[in-house]
Length: 70
Image 1: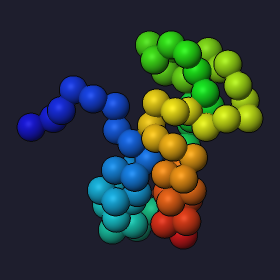
Image 2 (image 1 turned 120 degrees about the horizontal axis):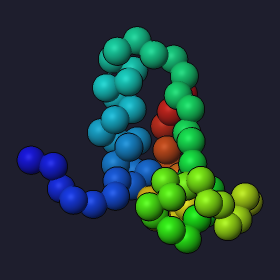
Image 3 (image 1 turned 60 degrees about the vertical axis):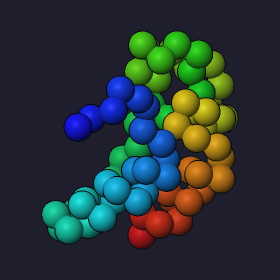
Image 4 (image 1 turned 90 degrees about the vertical axis):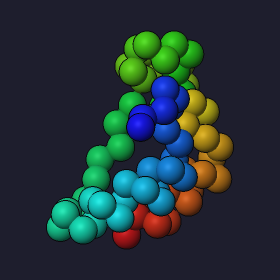
């Protein structure tokens, strides 16, 4: 059953990346991960182009995702 919450960088790295790799894809594009104040904008009302969104976790969590992706 689905939870009513925002997924995290670590959840994506641990749960979704393996499925992407199994499907044979060799690239992903992360969209709308810049910091934004209003979740309903889906990341398109950016407030800081130089900060990863805190909606999905800490900077260390994004680093974990990036390092696990190759």
